[in-house]
Length: 72
Ligand code: 9UX
Image (cartoon, rainbow, N blue to C red; front, side, top):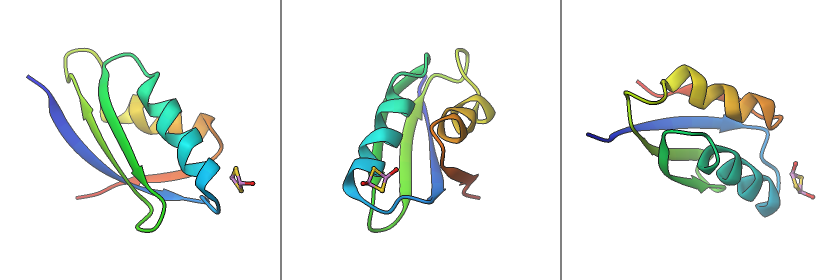
């Protein structure tokens, strides 16, 4: 069963940044869907909890070069 997490992304200054983050998330195994909103600096990520953890999802954002915190 998929779960959804919302991440606050830091450091995106242009539309390409948002695309980079979205691609990084989408390519993470276990992530089913990722949407990044540049204006709100939020990422909405649908994932399979038996395949990937929120910590690993955040790691993908950090490796792409951006800051990230998980929303409560
Ligand atoms: Mo835009 Mo973002 O030129 O890392 S891609 S600032």
